[in-house]
Amino acid sequence: MHRALLILALAAPLACDEPADPAPFMGDDAFVRDPALDVELVSAHGDAISHATGDNCMRCHQENGPGPGRFTAAGTLHDEAGAPYPDGLVELRSAPDGMGDLVAAIEVDGLGNFYTTEALPLPATALFPTVYSEGGARKNFMPFPTSSGACNVCHAGGFGVRLPEG
Image (cartoon, rainbow, N blue to C red):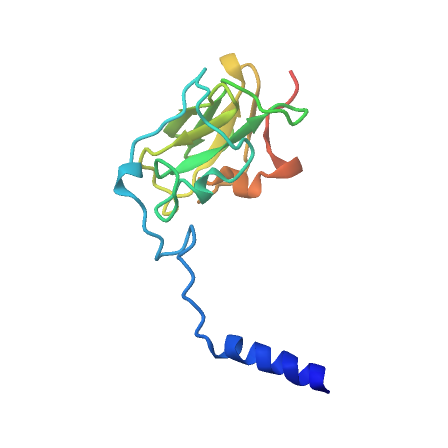
């Protein structure tokens, strides 16, 4: 009995303290982004400055995140075995399978990542992604449109953006 009273007496002051407001977290509208981070970034063949291959790039590279650039499209290209595939190409078009009007062509960097801060009509206009191997001999495409450029949100783990064997 005395032990229970002692525990209550010690815990009582903690229960009366007002909890501190937590700091805004990444992605929260209250997150304060340094304006110096708002730079143009576009991946290019051979570059090796990207990181976090396979992760959701736009988790950090967005208006309420700490990453440089506000990506409008980003992701990782993989080979058939699931390894990052460098120096490919991603096209966003108005129709599937590389058809229709070309809206954007994004080079895949030397680490297999692709990203751009260029203005895109997403999410207002859905687009059809097509990926190509280096030199364009192999390709893969989404048969349905997407209204999001955050490719690694859906294409994660075993569902990565992949090129067929060739």
